[in-house]
Amino acid sequence: MDEQQAVPSAPPPAAHVDTGLADNVAGALAYITVIPAILFLLIEPYSKRPFVKFNAFQCICLAVVGIVLYPIDVVLLFIPILGWAMILLIWLTMLVMVVMCIVKAYNGVKFKIPVLGNFAEKFAQ
Image (tube, rainbow, N blue to C red; front, side):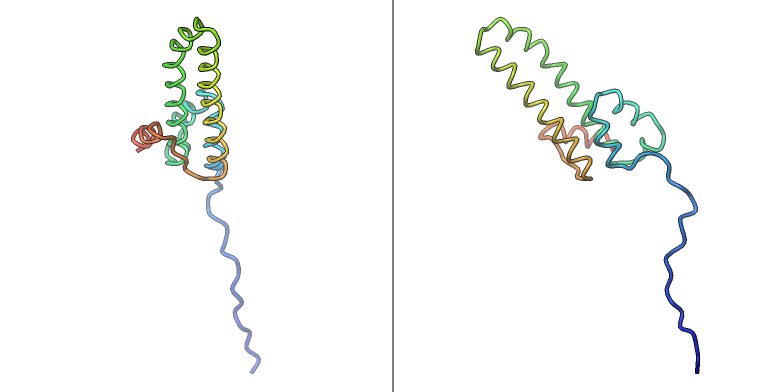
């Protein structure tokens, strides 16, 4: 008997074409400044995605921390050497946190900054 065996084929393409950025790219871009973070929370396809929302809110939380730290930095400017070193340490820490968040988000990892990540998670729900 010469019966043809059915060879499984690849599933048909999805009915809709997903336009826009992937979640990992949008999550990483949210940390560039606070503006993309706000836009991702306002633009429809991204505002529904939990990973993008979490990263956008975590970026906004980091920005709020930066705004709160600014007056402290102004006071520290008047303390020679020790104050300047503390300002440098504060802003280097902020920079490292932002870079870590960008890299983790791009890799698709939900990285929670201590304390701030919990707030971002609550807001993202």
